[in-house]
Image (cartoon, rainbow, N blue to C red; front, side, top):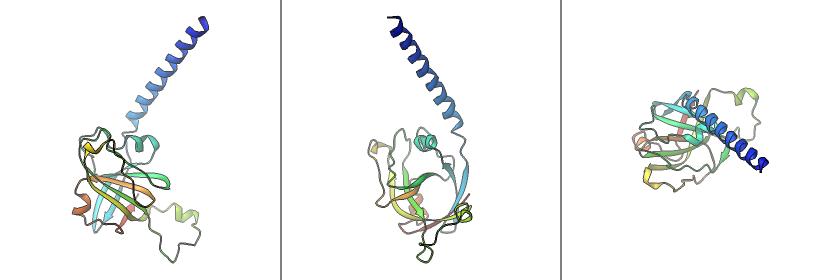
Length: 171
């Protein structure tokens, strides 16, 4: 009986500690680095969701983006799905991959190439004007992507962004 009580108390303390750590982490995760994306001669400032916690939280619960968009940076290309959980406004979802030219596709990347501060990103899929009411539907790209740009609904149309468009990312 004493062992069960001690185990229950220990479990409650551990859960409380995890909750506190999560709350502390969520406050600091609101400090996003920024980058610039140039699309068709327009430069937009984007927040970078470059950690697991920032990607999970995304734009949920915000009344506005606070920039021109949020760029999700994933560790690898995949079919990264997004949903509108706790979203308060509609978004354009734009999936991007690093542009691969046919001439250098088979050339191994050097360390210097991988550390470039400027990258050409190619649009591989777009979902326009996704409403918050679509939750819990998950939106996936038709092709693998490493990045996803979330921007206010209408961004893609206003900036003539289509599948195949090239965006320049400056960090």
